[in-house]
Length: 151
Picture (spheres, rainbow, N blue to C red):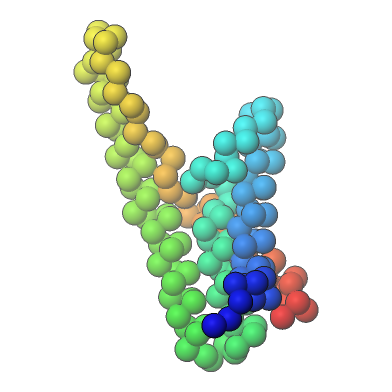
């Protein structure tokens, strides 16, 4: 059995994780510029610009392509996985966030005269806009391309 320390030698995984962390760091900077307030919660929440999920899976797919080959089954698998994750981020989770926003608004309107009603609000920022997904994907490609010498 391989040592768990061998995970640290998986450069494709490390570059993909770096892309994810860079995207999360950029969210913090963008949030600071937009609102002139440091909000470290963006480091651990979903949604926002750029999509860290997209950066992660795109860097992973590109890293697989660079190391194993663009015609490999592994690259095809990583690419299909990336497409599904990005579609989910911009499609399904974005729609769920819109539904949560509408439900929160309905609850606010129905119970605004009942201060004893203390139901937790639904989380509204779940997914990404297509622009956020594309930006995350471009970031993942860029970071993987810049790290190609590490492979």
